[in-house]
Length: 512
Image (cartoon, rainbow, N blue to C red):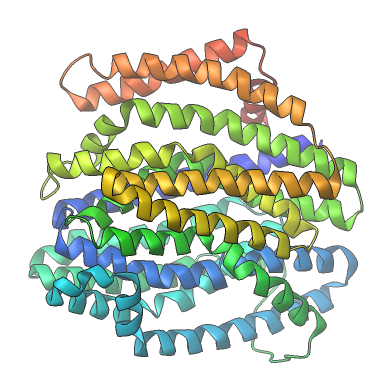
């Protein structure tokens, strides 16, 4: 029954994420068409990194990891009145912190940009544009972090679809702008207008979720009480996890710094390759990570360690079953996929080569990206935020070293490869310490899953590699290659009697 609930919740999250990502790719294709992978796009994506870091800290990252276990505890042990009071106190404190962060961020934008893209110093106009875009986008963090707060609340209340689909509001805002306003502006104003549309997208992301919160009988109003015990608990849980949950964004900053010293278009290529890699990761890996934290937190609150281990084991196996074939599939047809998605307008063949190179190395880390998030959630469910931050710190140090070593021989591919290697290091460290904390959680079953899935995935990727060469029409070849890989993978998984395949198929049959 627990597996059924977990897979049902994961399905809702995956479906909402899929719809959101489709709109996200339409947005990215429009941006690529307008700006290619040149100066304007580099400046925009470098500027967007900064509010995104705060989003990870005060939004779905460190804050959610600290908030969800405490809110789950309140839901199960306190009355609705106390829970409502707790929500209001957290909401008020969060708004205050976000407003202060936005004001300071706008003021210190020149220093922040120089810190994350000092390679732009050789191009004063590019540096100045990045500063201006950063100032324009900083208010975005107020809306997007409050939206992430609502998503965390809804997830604990077992509402997953809306919180997964709501990020599409950002894409809708940018798409509307680029289709209806941008064509009438000059190029520099076009990119500034795009930054403004980001703010509107963040506001819409927050707005669409609030009615659902009201549906569950909760509301938000200002109530400042910095002595509230639960608020203090969230704060002290959050402090050590800021680095741990922000490691992806910090690593992205490091990539941006290093990329600013490489050829023009490198930062944009990293962004687009990461976006493609994020599609299977978001649909399968992040979806499972999102639903696993509330589930694991419930098991912890109920002191049911057996269910805790079973849920963890199941989440990891289902994640690997989805992301191993994604890793090999992207490695096989990444170049063709990049060309189909982005090669038009100002985005040319040289941009496709650079982006697909980064995509290949990013995709090698797909299983680790997901597994590390799920294993970290196991610690967060125990309200242990210190262990993941220590592991993240070691992986971040490794990432910095590898970026410096690999960026010259491999270019943007070296930066992506460094991210993949560091993610595997983080995963293995988390496994080691989690095993010491709770004992074995079914390693033999997980390794069986890896072995069977790798065999099926390899042959599926080979089928995709040859299918994509059938003719010169990418609009035909890429879908055929993907379909070929899926058919081969599922047939072989069936022949190998993969338990994960049966779980996946049963998920599709799960009724609402």
